[in-house]
Image 1 (tube, one colour):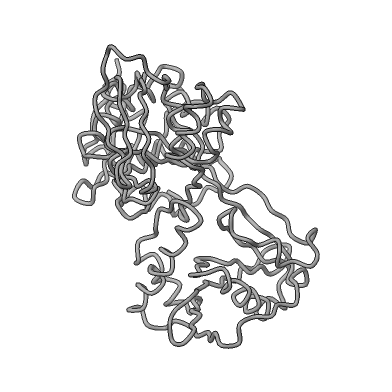
Image 2 (cartoon, rainbow, N blue to C red):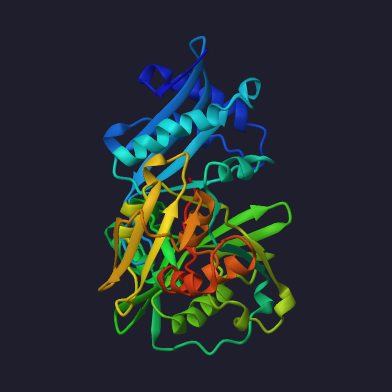
Amino acid sequence: MYEIREAREEDREQSVELLVKVFRDIDGYQEDWIHSWRNYMNRPEYEDWNYIATHNGEVVANLAFFANNNNLIRGGQVRYGGVWAVAVDSDHRKKGLLRRIYEQTFQSMRDKSITLSILETSPYEGAQPAYERLGYEVVEKRVRHEFTPSGLRPINADETITVRKLTDEKEVNLISQLERTMTRFGSTAFNWPGFFIGGIKAGHHYVFERNEEPVGCVNLLFLEKSTGKELHLLNTYFSSDDILPTILRFVGTHASEVSKVVWNCNLNIPVRILFQHVYSLSTTTDGAMMMRVVDFPGYCKSIKIPEELNLELTLRIVDNECPWNEGLYRIRCHEGSLIVEEGDSKVSPDFVLKPNELSRIVGGIEAPSVLQKMGLVNCDSSVVEKLDAIFPRDSFISHFRF
């Protein structure tokens, strides 16, 4: 007999042992994960909760989630639940434990006014399909650029821009302010300011200023690899595109003795144009965040839309995992906000959405019209035009992993 419940303090060590057992053999496993599991799971005072499944008193499945308000998603602050530390013991898989834990987790999220859930799927084959069956869809567009400094074009940078190394931890908010300018590339979950302090202490953070105004920053991290020395670009933020050439020229001056430069960033940042040898730039996908709407009316009330929109839609949602989402809705655009009301049962909906279709549309990885052409959203052309206007393509970028 399995029991699904919220974890207690005395369950912590068993949960940690389970997580180590499940994750220790995957690529990229790090011993410091144990510290995070032992110290950061199940801290309700910090809005971090933990749910478990037990069998004969032994923890055989685990799921943790935290509340995040430090973001700007589709122009609004969306309270989301970041799911992490998910594991099911190999001897207890294919028994529906993950779904049963999620039944309580989704209800708990709703009770805590969380409207959206985010997670990073594990590399296990079958992990992504398992989350898709729960209504999640991959939404993040993040790439990893690798290049040699010789591949960069000769760059005519702005000579009025100065650069200095950050040494004062009190300037951590300066980096956070620059990070927020990156929302022009899409919805963003921001790092907590304290995340940057380590880089400042280590002397890795640099800030770019024009007329004494901060306009960009970068964290340069040198790593010794078996293939040679690498330079990794972290926390690269810039308030306008004309700052990027100056940042990359600065990177080039520090990369003369490295074998490779590695930069993880948003796909939409105009990088390729700055290379004279395009084949010297290798770009791979580096985003696996998945998203799921937990509270549809709450999510719609959180986001912003173009103020000029004056559209109306009627839709029906079918959602077994979050049954409170089920029903007929009338959606109206009003002065940059979405008004969600109970629909008239006598009126046929413009379209019917299942959780995956809903997550694809609001996730923004592609425009609804593209999803329709690919057979991933089922509605007619007049409806998809409205969806394109209300939920345009809008890449979600997490910047950090959890």
